Length: 113
Length: 112
Image 1 (cartoon, chains in turn red, cyan):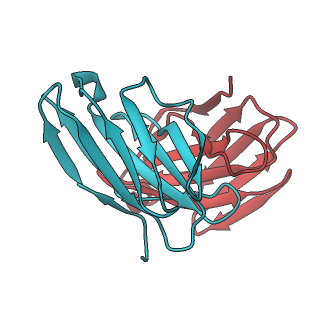
Image 2: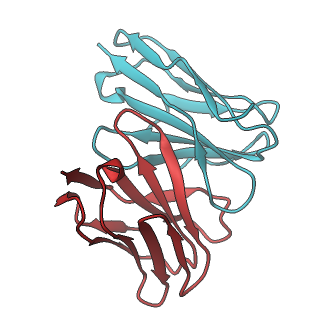
């Protein structure tokens, strides 16, 4: 059974600090996805990581993928309040990508002034 | 349409009633997925379609749940004889090609 585990599940941090969210998965997938969800809202795609060693950055967020370790990280640099949200990582249920994604439980991130 | 559209956004029903949830995917998207999301949890896969063909329904909890996409566009998720444990947010997503899913706003179902 495919497992996707995120760590930590809850994170409270101060503005201006750096932190990393970890996503471990049990399949041999070469692709990994990060989503953001604001309270009461839908899921918004943040990053699509397509190969080993892939790194993508958007503003204060940077995601990376190590397929050999089956690990992805989402790094937050100099956090600001607007980044408070729940972040999900997801991997493909089966090879090929058309079978949908399996999601982690999410990391609930609160950034305090 | 511009995004994935789901209706109704909120549905309150009594135990034992049937409910139908509708999803209109992004125009041109071949694949359509149904997920269920409990409060504080990640989305849980239910079923998906490529065009009108249901490819995998292994995530449907039991035979009270069914889905269809008869013309390869709009899809309906039907729950028969609803139970309180069916209360959740039901999310639809569509995809053009590999894995990246685009989600709708969801249909929140409450079974009394």
